[in-house]
Image (cartoon, rainbow, N blue to C red):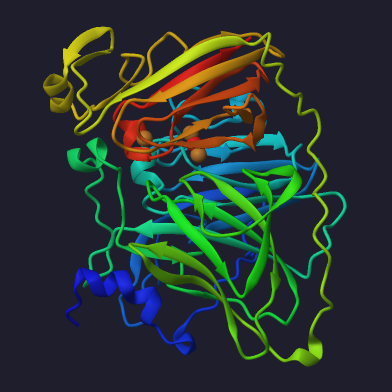
Length: 465
Ligand code: C2O
Ligand code: CU
């Protein structure tokens, strides 16, 4: 079975639908008080390939679905059965800092054989996810993530609710085993760890049968280390209902391809416009090539739903104060470094080092001249205070900046505020400004979600007291 790299890249596109494993995520029968990280073998590549060894929550890919009603408590004892220390971060949830799961900042990493009790309330409805937050560029690449869905008190008017977690894996084209070289200087200094095989819900292609006119709620999650997905809908009429869990005041019609950066989520309502016996798709556009990432074969019209009106917005989440940008304190974050970035020198652990000295210790990026975390936060805020951070990308790569514990709004060029988000994609050469109201007290990480970048210097933190 000699496969070229290109064959692996095309696997999703060329497979017959009959061989596919349906990729719907359903809650599995695991102990709902535990979340166990362990090594597992799963059929990640198509069926004619061997199983792939991953690290998964409860041994699953994706990890166990955690789904609660808004306002419910989530209490899980994290059990670490991995050969490496780990921790769990609940990406996008506004919870107490002690539960945020950042090893080295909000808690100690849980050693192999150890446990940690996570316990918090899911105050915000929406699409979130959880993932490992110790050596994330390795542990997330190995599969340590899952969806975390918080359902609105009042169910939305839809026919089906589907979670689609996208990840691009770097697999050996013959053995389907994971490339376990997680520290390559090239990944860390360029675009991050990119894969050669994109899976949806841990499957080469996901097939979800639908009926004509059905309204689907598609919850898209980008769990990849570094891949910016360019996606489009075919045979579906869509609206963006929420970004990063937070509902839009006015749903946005999907008019063309859209981007989903690492860490980001999009909730779509998508009405099936394809007819019986046709197949609608979530399409990924890569190098001008369209690849199906999820197929929705349309069944008989006898059971068709009736065509709906334009969706009304989802209910807003509670206590989202609007940032007062005029009185806000201002901060600057200048990103520098990376390959072809021209970074001369920066401070690592208080010591000024030139670029080749930094490269020698596998560090490549700086925020305001500082490589990685040090004792000084980017901003020291009191709870309730508004901050504006101007993010200047002085590198030749895009970066997906994620703020823990708080959602922000972009301050747009016309002075208007963009939608609430927790992860913002900033392209090379761009300067983009965000504003947010400081939330719960604690140390909140602010980093690039291209995880190799975070590991190679792109991380800082915000202190809230
Ligand atoms: Cu989803 Cu600090 O990350
Ligand atoms: Cu980055």
